[in-house]
Length: 370
Image (cartoon, rainbow, N blue to C red; front, side, top):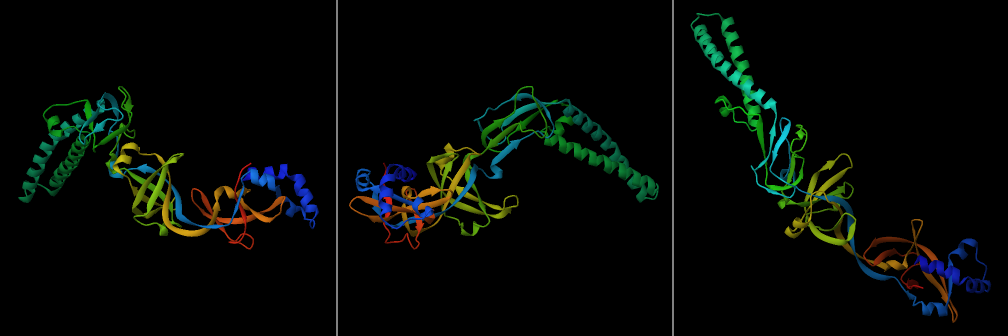
C-alpha cells in the first residue's frame, strides 16, 4: 500500500494539481493527505474499491517460552567428590537406563576416606566395649560418674564419625562392608539416576571434574512439554484446554498445535510471570529438543469485527491509515488518507475500528498494485 501511495503522488502530481485548482483551496496538511489518480490508471492497475466487511477473528494471547521437561525427568549428573575421568561409557544421543554406568572417576582422596573409615571402625569396637563396661560399673556404684560420662562421650563422638564416613562412602558408590573387608579402591563408578537420552557430556578421558561440574546431562523425553511464560495481568484469561499455536525459534512458517494442560499457581518474582504448560504429541516429542525457544499464541476466544484486507492498511510512524474515496468522475479518482484505529489481526485481515469517516458506508481502497 505504501507503494500505491507514493506512486500516486509522483506519477499523478499534474492531474492532482489540475483537479484541486478547480475546487476550494486545501491547507498544507489536507493536501498532503489527498491523492488523485486518473481513471485510466485506476483501471489498468486493477485497483479495487470496497467497504468494511465483517470477519471472524481469533482473540489470541501472544507469549514466549521453551520446550522443556519436568524437573524429575532431567538429571545433571555430578560427582559428590571431584576426580579425573578414567573411563566414559556414553555419548551424546545414547539412550540410558536408570542405574546404568556413566563413567568411572579416580581420586586418591577416595582412598583417604576409606582408610579413615577403617580406623574409626576399629576404634568404635574398643570405645563401645569401654562404654558398656563403665556403664555397668557405674550402675553398681563401682566407678565414678565422671569416668562413665567420659566413656559415653568418646563412644558417641566416634559413632558419629563412623556413621558420617559410612554415609560418605555410600554417596560415592563405595560399599562400606567391602572396605571393612580390606578392599580399598581409588576409583568410583557414576550411575544414571533416571532413564533418558544423553544431551550433554563433559566426560573427556583424563579431564578433572569438580563436584560442581556436570559430567553428563540426561533428559527423559517421554514427558516433553511446552513451557510458556504468561504475565500476571493476562493469567485470568488462561485456562486448561485452550488451544496453543506455536512455532520454533524464528521459523514462523511452520506452526504446531498444543493444548494447555497445567496452569501454574506460583509467580516468578523476577518478571511477574506464571508458567503454563502445554501437552505435546508423541510425534512432536520425537522432533523437538529441550531448550528450544518458542513463540506461541493462546487462543482465548473468537469475535466478529469490521475489517479490511491487511494490504489495504498503510503503516506510518506507528500509526495506521486507509485510503478513503472522496469522489470520482469520468477522468479521475480522488482518495484521502485517513487515520484509523485497528484491533486484532488474522492472516489476511485486520480489524478496523469505525469512526465518523471510515464506517460501513465508506468506500475504501481495498486492493491494487501498480
